[in-house]
Length: 223
Image (cartoon, rainbow, N blue to C red; front, side, top):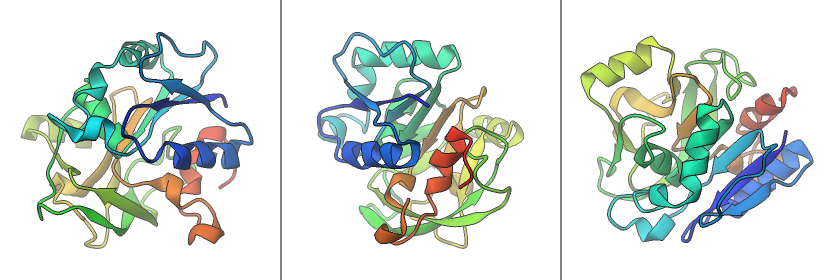
């Protein structure tokens, strides 16, 4: 699997994501600056990591979503290339129109940084096949604007089409997201956005490897 990590000013999880992709795949991803004009032709996975692009001015991800490289990300996504956005990356994908809904301020109005539990809602995708249906696993979160919301029609469509990827489990919803939604797919299920950080829990030395299956699943490996 050849991957590319998009880097924006203000991100602080790009190195974490690069390290995770390198560790699991054995190949370092290409890093692409947000002002670059294009992406590598042979890339199989595009990743937008977490952080605070442009200091979260206007709305989280709103400025980054208008960077030149995002036109290319939309083009590749339309051609079926897999796109993963984590935390601020999720916010950018929503602002770029690649995923529906909105990510609002946490219900507590406070930044949250802790471990939560996630339930795998749809294990029948390239992103989630490393897990089993209904599996609950640990994952860290660190965000201020992770409260997922969409209108009733959109929520019904997401739930009915199998577009909900992950749900906060066992009462660990850290932000008030509707239906405990932690991550969603686009209709074609080649674009995934999620608030938690699986890249920060991929090896025992970091406290566990619950997040590793997302990346190994993309590679078609055993978790």
